[in-house]
Image 1 (cartoon, helix red, strand yellow):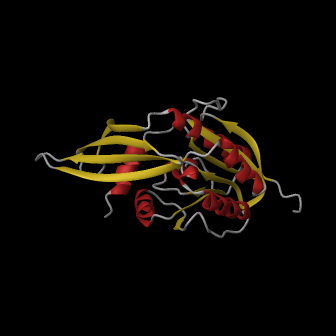
Image 2 (cartoon, helix red, strand yellow):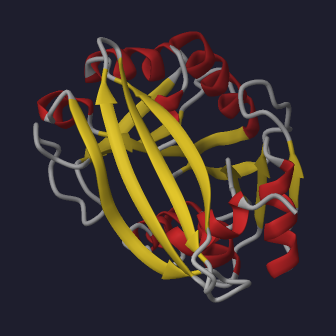
Image 3 (cartoon, helix red, strand yellow):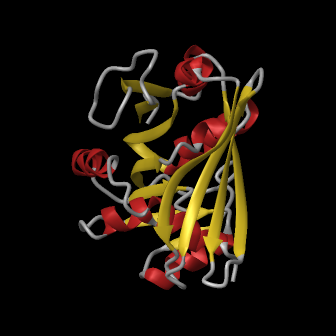
Length: 244
């Protein structure tokens, strides 16, 4: 079994700051709801357990296997850049800071795929780290202890160390998961992710060029206004097809 999905899930399982926000959107737009990059199902299961019809997909089959091992869910393996679904969804979510990990051509392809999957009047909602904030952070940070949790299978302590480096156009983060065994051995798993440092105006132009109307932009999941030091950029957009 791939060691990463249980580590990822345990690392993020207690994070719930965004769930009331997504539940409010679900109440506003209704279902069915599509989650892009559903991972191990933290968001998907919260909405599904609240009675909404959920469909999720992820390109990582190991993550989906772990999700299915925890609970029943309608999920499938697909690339969010080029998926093809009928326009049946009232709401499409791309949570968990995934959107800005793609290059501009990939983001445009993703947006076009989402547009085709939504009913007219449906919403696409995404979040990503605030590029303006990332630009103010130190250019490089050495390893810092972020969190300690118990491994869900072995109950051994797992230390999560974080380091990052800012480049000209990307912000790269590395998480190191160290599982500590009773005999003193350490098993490490490393996960890396990069986030685009483009100006917010570029993301706005891309979204609008694909036909979406931006209804709201927030800097946090409690709907605080977006300012330069906001932790996140959260966009609520709608598909308004006047030809429909």
